Length: 152
Image 1 (tube, one colour):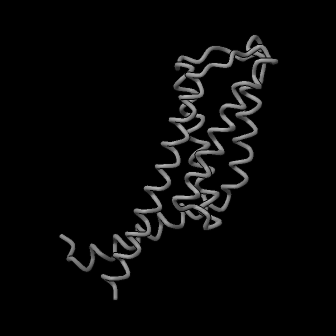
Image 2: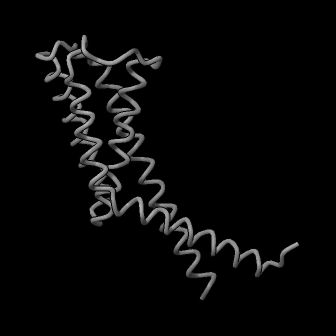
Image 3: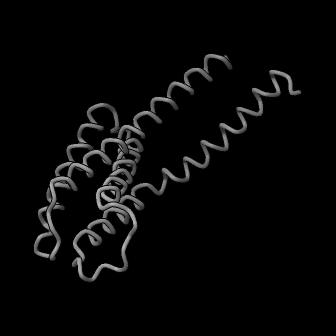
């Protein structure tokens, strides 16, 4: 059985690996955000009769998941620029709420239907994505703080 100091050393090593993996993901976050947002725009404005195959998920689940991803990516991009606190989270949510509404309305000329419940799913997904990153940032800051106290 490992000693307490061996366990702490192993945990610190795993923590370093996790931070390196997260740093790689964060570095490409702006590019990923742009590509993801563009793909969402194209997907939501493609004429309904030309959409490939059927998806076995509810339309509302797809909206929720798409905006969850958008909320996560936008939050990471803002956090990377040190613009993500309470105000940044509110700005991100407002931006995604506005975009979601415009996205629903602008689908009409492309043979799609604007649905208020789709927009509600967009809002829920964006909110949870933003809250997920907020929670992760809080946890990482707290963990770093505790790690500095225990190592010093």
